[in-house]
Image (cartoon, rainbow, N blue to C red; front, top):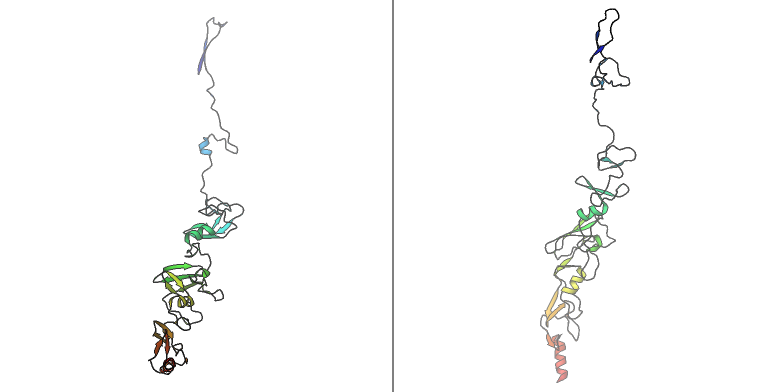
Length: 268
């Protein structure tokens, strides 16, 4: 800014003098940039230019952050050990069995509880590779643990433990039992499966003499209000088979003509 100074009288002229001077202008603060030039350019001109950074290295499949240190390799990705967890219970999976479904990690328990087939008998998840698939017209579609598909009467499993199993064995119950050593069959009665022995014992008619079950297709005689094995239907006295279909009855027992005649004559 200009300033006016009034001095005393000049000894030579006797007139006062006015001196107009200019003070130094206000100082402009300077920003010192280490290593910068003193060329007078603004700080913006001396600022370093931005450079693009390419994403590289290992990044977590869970949080997306960079991985430094230990990593877990699973499901085609890399994970922080603390990020690889079950998506249901949040259990750490680094040292546990893990399963993948739709790109999400599961622990052993949660995966099988949701996606494994359930045993019809015990209603728990089937985690074994070998299990039984049932497709029956009456019972419908079911799955069983190998030893949980058994006869409703005796409790014996239809697939014996000594019989080598397959990864997935399918049974079809149609009331007919296969004759092969490796074939397993059952019959259904009132919504329950039965083995051959129990089915025959419980459902088939019994011979009036030997009390054994008479299976379908066996030669049998129907007489005296019941069924008889072919070889059991003999004369109650001489125990010989009848030469012709005719026989005589007394006290619920069959007699041949010869024995019946002797018995009648002895009573006369």
